[in-house]
Length: 487
Image 1 (tube, helix red, strand yellow):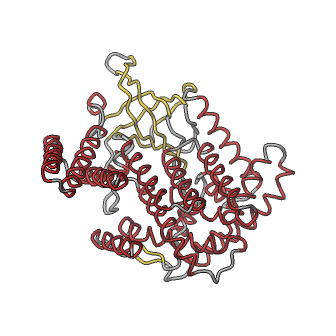
Image 2 (cartoon, helix red, strand yellow; image 1 turned 90 degrees about the vertical axis):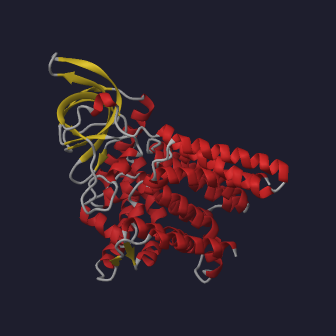
């Protein structure tokens, strides 16, 4: 009974949050729904019909979701910043996230705190405001740097004919202003010292990898182990997208959940199952710490740990409750991730697939040997891929025919490449000579994966587009999956 009450509350909260993300619902309607729910509670007490109680509970949860979204949603930049949109400004602020280095540019999230008053020729304090700065690679900056930015500030705008909601994507992180290719000048170091140290440690680790391995292997390994994509050529990323394995080189929940399952199989081959579960959980925690505790990684790490718990205890229903509570907590912290954060959506669905579908596929794939984690890789790939395919079709409108075999072939080598590559990168702090043999093994494993991607992406039928994949079809597919699992 208590579990049923909890599930109805979570379902109502999710429905309210999702409804508010699509429609502007005034507070008065949310309070009306609360009042209606309370009325149904009273009616339940009179008629003693459980249906009124559950409907009332669902409505109260829905109103909480609507109100929470409104409380979190700023709706735009602070008016004191908003008035400068479309003008040239000079501002000061602190880089509050690790710089996102791409092939042609670097994205910085600057927490603006000061603005130069051209009339009075002096700096004036401003309310904190997150600003996305797209800059050149050089000069380079780090988390915590206090910088001076001079350029044109504007509101984000959606790209024409892209179908991607750029404004909504930035708004989920409360970013409502951006500056493109300004003049950026370093002032001094700042930020939280522990986070700054972790990012510097990560940077030193990546430098070790770049010394030990050639490109694009070094960048590929950086993406596998700590989610760094810097210097990965765009054409290589396009190949990864075409064959459906882009998730292994980006820091997403899909990445962590799939690799967590494969890692469990590899560790289980060498160690007792409970020891492998503990080692896997510890590895995920260390991974989250090393990457600086970014929100997508923390969310993905929580879900991956729940997978391990489900495997270790076999109490799937309890783990599902824990997963739903964790998901509801994440949505409560930031309601916009339910609609605008593809990483959260993919990781949540992949986790459900790994918990519900993987055991069923494992029985049917008993002909695949367990040696070297082959069966684990196959079941993880098939279950997670099936769970996220309808969403990928809806979000991106593309479908990779070769995604399943490529994921199976690539994921077999991923845990080993991560192990030997990370070991080489860490030994590089001691001696590059000692680290070189392990780097050579990692190179061979990375080369194998790159060749697989190159081979399958060159096939003319590797990927095809399904423009404007209907949302109703996606919902229908998930309903059918749920019905099959329930049956």
